[in-house]
Image 1 (spheres, rainbow, N blue to C red):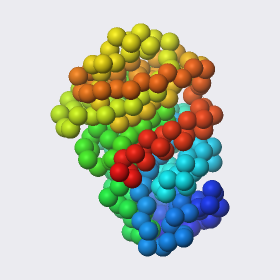
Image 2: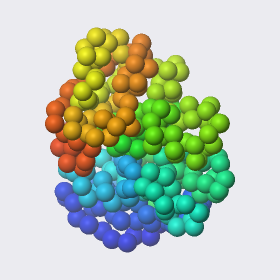
Image 3: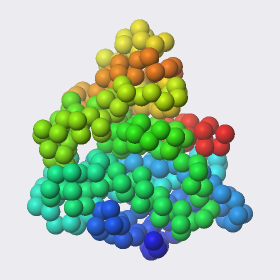
Amino acid sequence: MSVQTKATIASFGGKLLRLSHNASSTNCEMAFNLYLPPQTTTNPLHKVPLLIYLAGLTCTGDNGAEKGFFQHAASEKGIAVLYPDTSPRGLKIEGEDESFDFGSGAGFYVDATKSPWNKGYKMYSYITSELPKTVFENFKQVDSERVSIFGHSMGGHGALTLFLKNPGKYKSVSAFAPIANPSNCQWGQKAFGGYFGEEEKAKWAENDATELVKKWSGEPLDILIDVVCPSLPRLLHHERRKVFRLIKMVEQGTSDNFYKQGQLLPENFVKAAEGKGKVNVRLQDGYDHSYFTMATFADDHVGHAARYLLA
């Protein structure tokens, strides 16, 4: 499937491309950004791995590209970065644009099964299949065999669930302050109730990282998590030797109001992952839910992915 180039922007020696294409899974034109590091221009035959960034509620593919500061380390490591949108746009479904946490800008990286949302809100299929296929077909310098994923908030939920639902598809995963247990928070309950139905609790569990990690039976997971939350340090102090092995980093600040509101619930994910391997927890203090936090730790997240993408 062909793509249209809307703009080409120089960034850290590479090029940030603003692109769009007609997507069948979402039934609309989808905009996205793709960063190609300088290694792709100096040697056209050189293939680079791909790191997919999933953004949070209300965001588009522009937020991470403009404010995440991920291109800095990606340019040094020789990694392409893909920035998708967070939902379909302009489907004219009643209620689509009424709230920040459901509909436009809030696709939750799931495939909706409840009408009318099932007519285009298929972000799981779009992110795992249609979009990367489009990128690999149109940009031969991007290596389809080396892909990692990470995200923020709703996108952190997406990154964790896509990784856990597709063993071996992604080399690593990391997240900034993810919605780690959506079945038990207001944001997730609203989204899952709307996209799946209130009674479809099995479908909820299939798209909840905390429920998915409980059932993990593949290779031992190797998780790196950066968390700063008032209630987590004691839990991690007692449990860190027993708790999980997932390749992830979760940056979460003590000033994160959404954590205090019970929207993120990383402690539930930590407990559910017990017995899955090892965890290396870094505690960061004073950060919040914003892109300032992501920009601060961007190099760490790209570096984490590079350990697996460039192995």
